[in-house]
Amino acid sequence: MMETITSVEEMKVWSRRICGDDKVIGFVPTMGCLHEGHLSLVNASLSECDSTVVSIFVNPAQFGPDEDLESYPRTLEADKEILRSTGVDVLFLPAKEDLYPDGFQSFVEIEGKTNYLCGKSRPGFFRGVATIVLKLFNIVNPHTAFFGEKDWQQLEVIRTLVRDLNLDIKIAGQPIVRENDGLAMSSRNRYLSEEGRLSALSLSQALKTAQSRIEQGERSTEIIRNEIRQMIEQKNGTEVDYISVCDPEDFSESEEIRSRTLIALAVRIGKARLIDNRIIERA
Ligand code: PAF
Image (cartoon, rainbow, N blue to C red; front, side, top):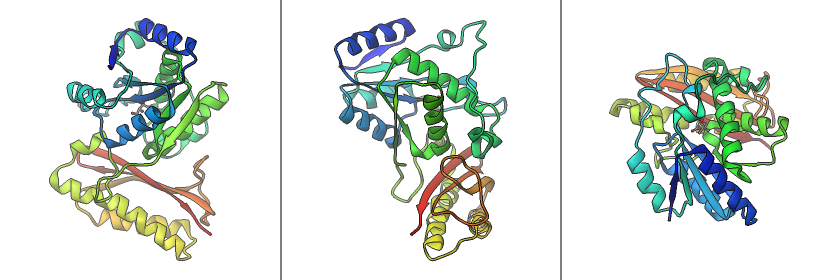
């Protein structure tokens, strides 16, 4: 039966007990409003680990002042219902006051990689992510933590955090889960109007087209970037934040498309800011 733990101390005690029994803990940190993408992380943990902890915490430190912290969808009862049917051992629901008490003043900063893509357009975002992820790691003490590849840069930033700070935690990336029509699953898809939902299809479609163009021999980063932009801007209500054709690990761009390339993009459609990406390996 799924246990719900809200206290940081209790979570640590639970984790010490499980580790003492030589069991492997899998961890899926989330901000709730769970969808199939989260469930693929949960299922990966359930199949690889002895015990699985899922956390739900809408982390204020990763939202900018003009972002959607207040309106971020919170669907706790539905989330609990979903998790109960999966076989998850613990739902960890920490309180904001316990994670960021008065006097809190320590943050984790990852340099370099965070100067690009979402790090560039959302200053402070990765500082907030790295800080909460390290805190949650210290509390839950997992052997393996699962993250979605939709947030490719986040995954890379967390891998860097684990490597640089010598954490003994395996980071497992899981493939993007898409709706039948290609839209990458995201809690923020809820913000889309009917028309916006149609326009949002252009993200995955443009990425797919770009992949075919590269496979057919196009080698210019600029041409691919412009073609993607055109496909997306043709659709109503889209506003491109960034499109990058870059190295999948350090996010640097070069004029000529390399053998292994990440195409990552962020687009605003109404209230929603959506991200998507594709890794392209060419022969
Ligand atoms: O990807 C998310 O949902 C969040 O950024 C995370 C990793 C749970 C940290 O708050």
